[in-house]
Image (tube, rainbow, N blue to C red; front, side, top):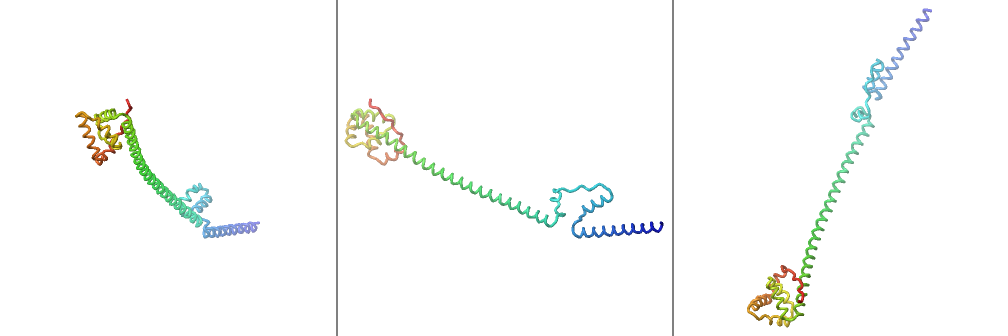
Amino acid sequence: MGKLLGMFGAVMVYFCIASVITLAVMLVYAKSQGFLDPDKVATMLAVARGDELPAAKGNDGEKENPKNATYEELEQFRQLRERNLELREQAMRNQRDLLASERLKLQSAIEQFADDKQEYAKNLVENQDRAIQQGRDNIRQLWETVKPKLAKELILNMIDKGELREVAAIMRDMTIAKQAKIVAEFKSESEQAKLDDLLRLLRVPNELAKQDSGLQPVPETANP
């Protein structure tokens, strides 16, 4: 019986030694293949000793500490970082192109506004000139229609209001015959003095033309 127990004990010893050798071989192989790292070894030792397991790292820890990642993970991380950089550069280029486009639109709008303003000012001056000339034509037609004495009174009334140049501008377009009939009605000394000033303007058309742009339109005078 004792001999049997001795043989059984020897078998158990040999089995334990073989198990330790096998485990050692497996650990060496695993480490050489990269299956083991310090964290895994620490975990295995803690299990063997019955200690508390070290806190496992999440995905954020692996991303923040890529030195423990595999080659494929490092390559993926590098490609992702390059892609992010490309997207940022593309976004900056898009913003730059958009800014350049908006600047061109603004410049075009400013130029168009300047052209419209110039065209508006030109049309305004032309419309004012046409309105002034139309008013003068109406007054001239009235003076030509009424009796020369009444036309003289209307002319003197305008001269007394300081509109001598406007009177000259209106009479300038009248025929010589109509002018002569009206001028013949200026008989008193005061009327002759005013007539002299009027005729002086009619004799110097260039002087009168200089003032045309500053003249105000004369309202149409009703026939009393």
